[in-house]
Image 1 (cartoon, rainbow, N blue to C red):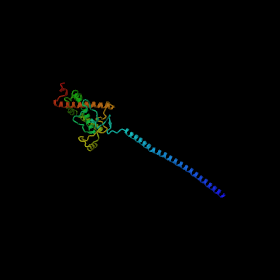
Image 2 (image 1 turned 90 degrees about the vertical axis):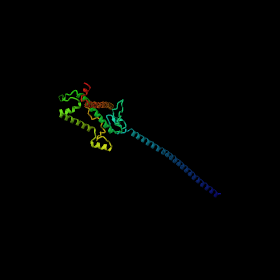
Image 3 (image 1 turned 120 degrees about the vertical axis):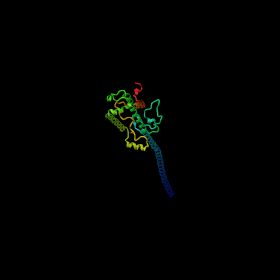
Image 4 (image 1 turned 45 degrees about the vertical axis):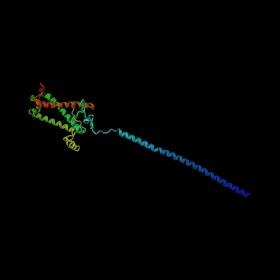
Amino acid sequence: ATPQRKVTKHNTTVSSKLNCKTSLLSHNNIKLNKMKISALIISALATSAAAFAPSRVVQTTRLNMADAAADVEEEPAKPAWPTINGWTADPDAFCAGLPGALSPLGDFDPAGFTKDLSVQEIKRYREAEVTHGRVSMLAVLGYLVGENFHPLFNGSITGPANTHLAQVQETAPFFFAFLVAAIAVSETTRASTGWVEPEEALAYNSQNEVKGAFGALLRDNYYPGDIGFDPLGLKPNDPAEFATMQTKELQNGRLAMIAAMGFIVQEQVSGETILGTLGF
């Protein structure tokens, strides 16, 4: 009986030890499982956060690109031609957008002189038109006044105005020379103000195949006819008012060119003064 009790006691001790070990293993497994579950949860949360991160970067990048595009669009494009007296040359507009058109004729160019011309050529044409118009307005006034009122040179200059310049040359040669010198200085000043130097103009016209310009080329920042001579301060500062005054000057100049041509031809044919031809 004693050995059997010992065996039973021994078995009981071994069973208790095994139960303790099993309990420890079960406890460790539970801890390990909890740690795995925690790791999985943390990993899932990290993955979710990382999944949302790129969209924020992309969204921010898109916003920055949109802001940059908006900034670029807001910057005005630099015009190809400078703005002078409120006028910016438009190669696609009639006469490059210069003033001078007036109803009912409007864009009047039946001969097509300005068709397919460059801005530089149109400016040269306008320079010639304005200059000849101003000379013609003075000429018409000179014909009407000079033929009927001539206090200079003791009244020796008489008859049709077509002959007055020749009479001055004979009567007062020094005054005639002074007159020629004054005209030369005025033309030189006008040329130096608005025109490019001949060498540069010839090179430009040759490179761009401009024909018939005879080395003439106006400066880009020069408005045709605006040489800065305005002793009475009549030039308006407002672009709209300037365009209106320019149109008036052009219309009067065009009429004066026709009138002056009529005066010259009439006196050459009749040999009489203008008022004399009309019976006054």
